[in-house]
Length: 137
Image (tube, rainbow, N blue to C red):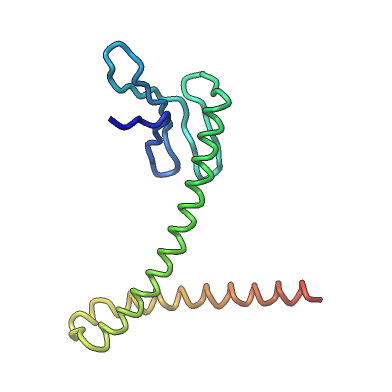
């Protein structure tokens, strides 16, 4: 049997619940003892149940948190690249396959979403251009 990790991170919406994995007991059962809760949004690491985290526990959790934040950021940009692909696929579908009934069903929602996205993109680009121009002056 392969060796189990020392810590298990149960992923949840805004972070994780952290458990210390223990197999060194009389029954040789896997026990998972909760030691902390991690919040990815604010970087908070809270020990569980009034206990203090050992330095190695804190460092392991901190490393997991940094890796998790990087992974989520990578996923965010990947989702946006997929959205661009979906927009292109949608354009091809509208041009070549969509029926009048299907277009009637989605046209208004697509037009509003695209208008909203375009407005935000144009505003953000203008903000970046102004900031770049100010930094050059």
